Image (cartoon, rainbow, N blue to C red; front, side):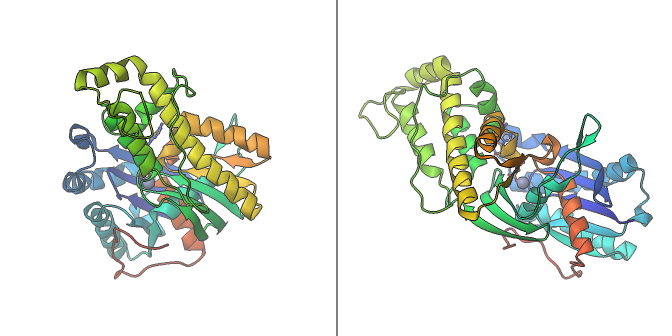
Length: 353
Ligand code: KG4
Ligand code: ZN
């Protein structure tokens, strides 16, 4: 029996999980509400909140799984990428724990873990859900990353396409900010889009080579579109709406604007995913990361899967946004592969896989 205790602290969620033989027994997540009033994550406040949360969160994960600390076989933690102060809290805690228990330490790459979340066992109506066969492709879409990943095994994967500027989650959040919505705006755009007409406003699709993505042009076109109260989305028209006209336009058209923005982000993502499937010949395809919670993306992904005869997979909601269960399952596979780290391992804001 292999028991892994995992810790995730890369951004603004403090999380701990217990995994036994590849099954998740607990996954405790403490969210940090303190950032809402600032319209984005404040790194220093995030580190402080992790310091306050880490002991109670690990304790809750052990209790909820009914596990004694002495019975764990290894400690896994998020090494990279993320906010360095946040990563340091989790990594120093994990290293101290491994040292004091004399157990091996497993450093996990956060983006690899988002992908491996697709292997967490799940069931529907008492039956085990199918899981992707290797090799598979994964579209990982979060607040900091947008990647198409080619996965040969849980521990061997390669990024074959990624954003050259903003991530998909940033595109949602920055669009929401332009609309005057609070942070994080992605889920709010999703909510309003459900009542809107996505064909009402057209935003441009960037022309980027290969399997890479770009979202910064979309943000600029939304900015112009709102500045001239919907008269054009491509260029500055010379007409500049005043604050009241702009706000009135947003208020009267919010659902249609959100639906149109969401549709464009989703088509940018899925057109590249389709291209990756054609290029590689792979038809087992997964979604991962916080943006895979988006209802428009999920629906269009399933529709595209039916049309092109893909086997499609999306992790359960709690394993899409940042969580320690994904670190635990990745830690489990690294344990089986003998991929341990010594105590000299350090947190890193950006590290290659
Ligand atoms: O993976 P994640 O929890 O954290 C990072 O590692 O970044 O992703 C967070 C991102 C945020 O940008 C948030 O706005 C976005 O995921 N997000 C959504 C939805 N739920 C979360 N974006 C669009 N629609 C949603 N329903
Ligand atoms: Zn993440």
